[in-house]
Length: 108
Image (cartoon, rainbow, N blue to C red):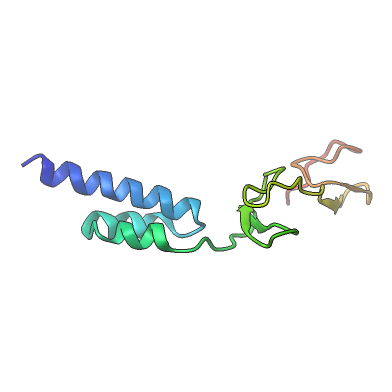
């Protein structure tokens, strides 16, 4: 009896983790994988999607990578530092959580 409860929970958790890493809705895929365990195959086969603030395209090979990565895991090239305009001091600074010039938050 316990395997009928534990198995759907485990497949739901695995489906949610894989879907989240690929930029998809983890809650929906977790529930679907708990109800239909064979959907794990579909989640593993789905390509990753761009998710604003979480993933981006590698400027060299075009593959989708995590936003904070310093190297592309596909082509192994070092990524250039992205510069943003600080809304407070109006200087271009590296894309971080705070401005390195005025030390204020860059997140709005």
